[in-house]
Amino acid sequence: MENRERLKREMLDKKVWAVVGATAKKDKFGYKVWRKLVQHGYEVYPVNQNYEDIHGQKCYKSLEELPKKPDVINFIIPSAAILDMLPRAKKLGVDYLWCQPGAANGEVVLEAESLGFNIAYNVCVLVELGE
Image 1 (cartoon, helix red, strand yellow):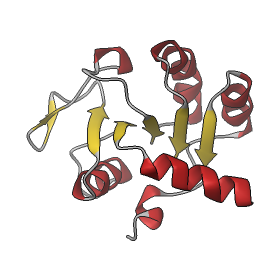
Image 2 (tube, rainbow, N blue to C red; image 1 turned 45 degrees about the vertical axis):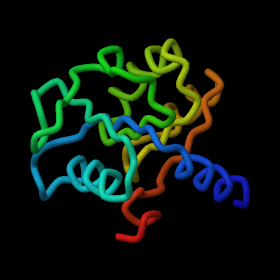
Image 3 (cartoon, one colour; image 1 turned 180 degrees about the horizontal axis):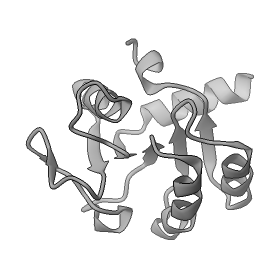
Image 4 (tube, rainbow, N blue to C red; image 1 turned 180 degrees about the vertical axis):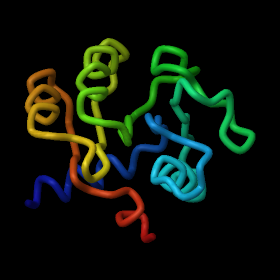
């Protein structure tokens, strides 16, 4: 358990994040997580192919479109979609993945670890940042 705590702290110290599954719908976690990170001074890039922008901030269709490599990718999407994105995240050289509760299943965790990612899962950014 200490390793998981250390990993969470390490990730939260990183200041450039991508939120995959960000949304403009204020009642959804994709919005709440994006907003909380912004409020805490992180440089946050929303990723969702269904939006041009989220409340005035440009939203990106894919990880490859981001103007800067994120330190951490936060996933708020289904497990199958995360599995599809892991090779692309690896290609970008990202080391840290954060999966909101319910996003990652065992297959995602095993695949991410086999690709060499540091992965936090079943932990909530909102909780960690004091929601």
